[in-house]
Image: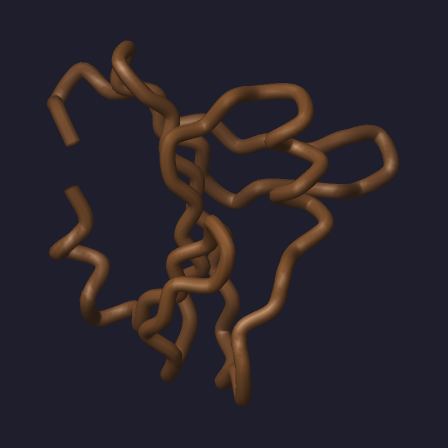
Length: 85
């Protein structure tokens, strides 16, 4: 990401949250971090709700074991995060 990118945290009054919202003035990329193993990918209500308010480019689910694209979510293992552009 460019050095001028801004990093935000998003949380609603009802407790729904997005861990990292990165805005580089051209696109918005979001990251949800889960310290767990997934047996299969799934949708996340918080990301769906956020997408209804803010148009984002990509959504990453950083996790322990799963590398897979599911709908518009990109599941990626934590150690691969440096590969995200």
